[in-house]
Length: 420
Image (cartoon, rainbow, N blue to C red; front, top):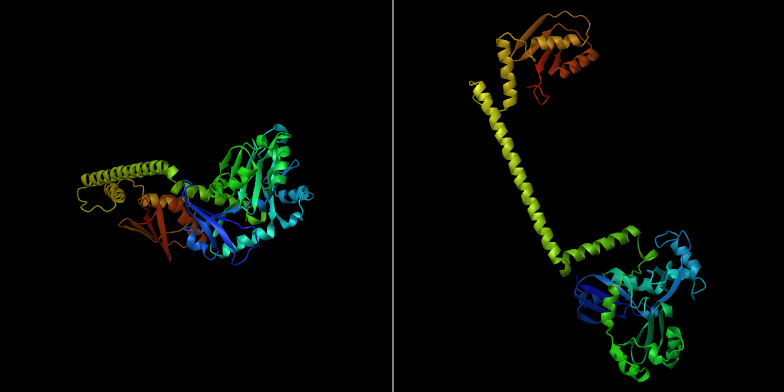
């Protein structure tokens, strides 16, 4: 998806302050850049989600070794960092924003050490609040320069009147930022390669176009051009995240943000277009298969219903209208058994046996009537508890009972457990 970057100025936040911005495609190709106030930025940027880049001279980097039992996700990490950096920072650690970086150490002796970035909390918070008030959302905070492992790299950035010498690497303390002059160059060989000459110490030198002529006069050797905007884009893919501790709501929110960003990239990025096509094809095949299976099941059920209806009509030709074939079959069989004098599972004898199994006190029936599959027993004077027990007993035997005074009306239940 497109990338929108806002670089914070080192000055304190003010309404008329200008911010550098950059718009780029998902292929990291710059499409627009410039400077604008926060009031103008929402019109310059097509997406309200922005990446914030912290300039190199606003951050200091410190290598720390965490004590045992404390890890990057420990709830006590912030207090431990305050103690470890208390003697290294000029200001009170409580007034600084600290961010735990990834480890860039390569040797075994420093495998448990991490880089920690520090900047003025009030300065950063003021800029972030202003960006939020302008209607934009900070997706991630990344450093313009971050510690690297391997060979030391030297960059000369800034304007002609204020050039900066930036060296990155483990041997220069992560990130070293000094004004670009002869005094800074005199420190560079000792920091990088001991007592070797300057020309051998700065073989990997990058310079922005604005200061390239100045660098060529002060430094011998091959000077490689560097674009500030390309450096910002590279910072977005370096994996650093400085929105931590009080700038990050919760670990769950940060996890959700990473998952959301990954999902949006998968849905919009050109790199995932073939995967999206494959998923769409698989989803289409899956839906088609489910529809075919549902059609087969529906056809089989319909054929089964037709078979049952045909069996009912063939067995009992006088049945002209089929509404509920199993229930009608059950009724016809019960009527046939009664007409032949046989015992029916839902006949009078079955009902009387169920009443006898209920264990009621001896009662004298005044009359017994049976018509249309319903049995009426008159003369039973039962208490409410006895009626409840009898109803439950009859229900287990497949009958439904309704008490109307001293008359009990008993009907057989259908297959759904409901009296017809």
